[in-house]
Image (cartoon, one colour):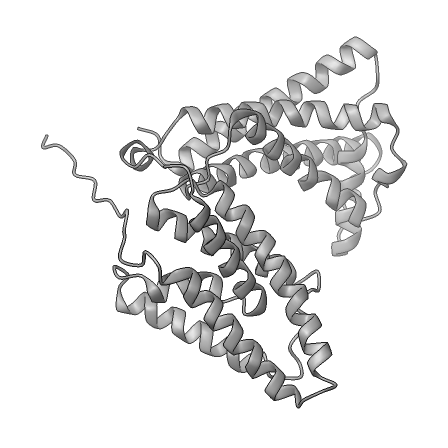
Length: 319
């Protein structure tokens, strides 16, 4: 049977093949030249890292082209593994939604570095440029979605996911808000409240939470809405929601969206609270009030249903 990692490799490879096939078909039908973005991206990365592509003239151009294409393959296959892991975590998307989401993620994985490194400005792309980029990535998303959904792992066969109820989605939103305030609560909340989690994991979760509660009060703590910090908070809200959904054997798609939305609200709302309260009370008091609110929200989200479990023990038949 297919495992999570091997399924991801198959899905990523199949999606990458589909992306290249649609790209080359477009080149054949419209007679357009191949994109030079992969080579330009290689040059930009080399400049940013202080290295250089060896060789001169045609030899160097060939290396640039090869490195650019290899990076695209690694990106496509790697994302396939990520999508498979997300599926194993309980996120089930309808085919049209899954295809668009996966295609958009693959497109962003290329276009964001392209824009960030100054290789190209997507805001100045023409309609034809966007179509030439979007259509192959949509093909990638459709194929990876089909493979990931069509090759369930043994755990997924044994544990089908039920639709997520409104209560679970609401609790995921609350946990996301708590994680936006204290990022460790996304994982620590479900872990500390679970009845079937071992003491070592609970100890690690408690230490992580205590460390953040202390570190949050330090002047050197970075802005929670900064580009280097906010993604981790959003990821914590998503991961916590997935754990709550797993506990109930529910589809994690809507809870994860709620967890991300709550985490964004908690991050920006918590920052607004600290700025507002900073002019009316000591900074430490404002931080402690936020600590209490985050802990209460996490408790309200995680304590209901804490004794439920969907943990499986797969028994292999005797040889």
